[in-house]
Image (cartoon, rainbow over all chains, first blue to last red; front, top):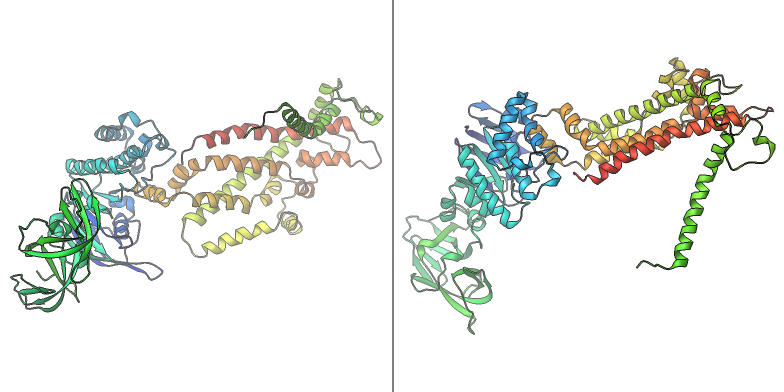
Length: 354
Length: 282
C-alpha cells in the first residue's frame, strides 16, 4: 500500500555517461506500472535507482511521503524479482524465502507462518525443502516471486523477470503475476523490453527512449494515440508504417492524394504519416486507398502479414490481413484505410499533430 | 573406438603396474626399513619384508627422545608440525578470503593497486625474502615460538588470487538480492559467500596444509629449541650426524609418521570436495 513519486530524477554515471535525463512519475497506490523501451534506454537503471542499487544523481524519490534517496535497499521496504532469479543456490526454497525476514529479525514463528502462507499462494508447498538447482525454470521464477511477496513490501520491482522462460511458460507466468498483483493490491513497477508483456500487464505504461520518457499512459491510450514517432514505431507489432506527407492546414497531401483530416492545426509543412499494419484493409470499406508491390507473405494462422513497397514513393510497407491470404499471380495489391487511423507527426519536432 | 585386444590390455596393465611400483616402492622400503632392528639396514642386505621391530621402533621414537641429536619425541614434533600446518592453512585462508572479499566487492580508492601489490608478491618465493623475514621475526622476539613459525608464512597471494577469481564468478544479482533482503557485508560474507565457497575452501585447505606441513627451511631457521622442532626438519637433523652411524631404525619410523597426516588430510578432504563437485548447485 504505497505511492511512489519521482521528481526530476537524473542519473549520471561516474564515467560521465548520462543514462537518465530527468524523469517525473507518480505511481499511485496499487498501480501496476510497466516501463518499456529498447535496450540501453535507461529503464533498468531507473528501476535499480528505485530499488536503491544505484545512487540517484539528482532529483527526489519518495515512497509515500518518505524521501528514500539515501536509503539502503533493505530500508526502502521494496522487494525485487531479478531476471536471473538470483536465488541463493545453497539454501532451500524455504530458506531463500525466509532470508529477508530473518535479516529483519522477525520471530521464528512469524517467519514460519509467512513463508507457509506465501508458499500456499504460489503452490510452492511441496518444493520448500528443495534447493534451486532441483527446480525447473518456472518453479525458480515462482520462488523468486515468493521471496518478494513474503516480505509484504510496499512496492514490487520486477526486472525483466520472464525473459529467461520459454514462450508458453512466459504467458502463464505473465497471467499469474498480474493475478497476484491484483490479489495483493501491491504497487508494482515492472521493466521489460517485451511489448506484449507491457501491454498486457500494465495499468499504465511508461515508454522510455534514450533516458527520457516518451509517453506515459494506459496501454490503449499509447496504442491509439502514440505521442511521438518513436512510441508509434515501438508499440505495436509489426511496427507502424511511416510515409512522408505534406500538411496544408486541415488537408493532408500524400503523393497525389489529398485527405481531409479535419484538423484545426495551422501547421503547414512536411509531416510523417503513420498507419498501423492492422489498419490497412483489403475490403473496400474505408475511404482511402494505396497500392503496394508485394515482396513477401508471412502467414501467422489467424492473420497474414504482407510485406511490400508503396507503388508511389517506394516506402516499405507491412499490412496485417485478416484470415488466410493466398497470393495470386498478381504482384501488387490495393489496400484501404481510413483517415481516422492515421497518425501525423511534425517531421522536425516529432510532435503529434492530430 | 575402444580397442579390446588381449595384447593391448596386457600391455596397458603392465605399464600401469610399473607406474604403481615406481611410486610405491620407495614408500614400501621406508616402511620396511622402519621395522628393522638397529644395524640391520647398514648390514648391506635390504630385506623387502617387514622385520619384527615395528612396535619397538615406533614406540621408541614416538614417546622417547627421537634421537641422540634431537632431544624431543616424535609425538611432540608431530604436534608442532600440526600446529604450524593448521596455523598456516587456516591463517592463509582467513586472510586471503578477507582480502579477496574486499577487492572484489568493495569500491575503494586504490583497490586495483592493492590487488596488484598482493599479486606481485607471487613473484617472490619465501626463500628469496627469507633473510629480511628472519630479521624481522628475530627483532620481534618470535624465534622459537609458534607465532614465529606460522605468521610469516600466512600471507598468500595465491589464495587471494584464487578467491578473487571465484568471487568474480558470483553473479552480481546475488549480491543485489542479498542487499534487498537486508544482508549487510558481514551477513553476505557468512550467509552466502562462505557457503558457496565451501569446495574452494576445502581444496585450498588441503593445499595449504600440505604446504605448511612440508615447510623445511623456515622452521630450520627460526627454531633452535628442540621443543619447537617440526617433524620434517627433524628427520633431516637426525640424518646429519657427521661421522657417526645414521640410526635408520629411528629415522625411518619418524619419516613414515611424518608422511601420515598429509595423507590423512588428503583422503578425508577429498571426499568433501568430490561431494561438492557432484552437487552442482551454482
